[in-house]
Image (tube, rainbow, N blue to C red; front, side):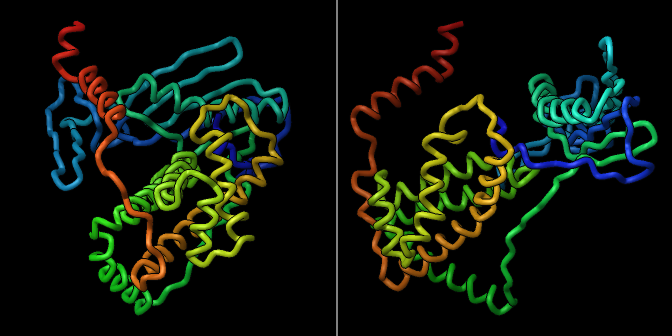
Length: 336
């Protein structure tokens, strides 16, 4: 649970003296997207009763949005417990309580930052996220921010980028060949994994799903057995230490951590720190694999296994037929 979200955070003093306890504390959280909370105009994924309907369908991407006119008015709600008040005005949630000590403050920050968006998303017509969390303790203003950020970067010139684009162009006939279906599938899974690492609110929101996509790429290329994957990676020029250090941990994560299987356990801070330092290398590692695959396929030094039979097996086909019968409108009406 939250395996990849629990990054090490600190309270960075922004204004005023160092906080002292006990003190009255206010935690403020910015919720996105703002229009869902009536904070400005913009597209939403629901129809606002009593407002004009202005649905835009993007036939290029398949996405559709509604921009209500007039826009949703700013939401204002609140509730009270014995020791705290939780309210929301527009996109900003505010939690005020009497804070006895620093550990209590961190405990409340963790609960609000990680669990409040889950509750809001469960009740609102579209999912929301928290993009900023800060607090006021007495006369002290503090931002709850990441302690450390490591971002791998590559250096390219305009000419190098143009050369790489031409290389991608030239590879199109290669991956279009039916015999290279595995190569095309692997590139798809690699693309999906790398996209998942950049489309989230943070680099870690979809880390588990990215790991699963990277696993699919290795399996479709080399098979499910780890020894076969080791041999396949070696044919692409990876040495044994690199394979064991960069690729095999991905397979282990898929098998037993919070990737293909749900987990309620929360890892210790020291364990999470080591795991995060490894995960930072995910995108560069698998970007490099994409590059090697294309170059090796183009020069003929890598030949993926034949795709084999592309149709479902009889057992798989029967399972699919049962599934489609369950989800078809006719079945739904019959159940009703």
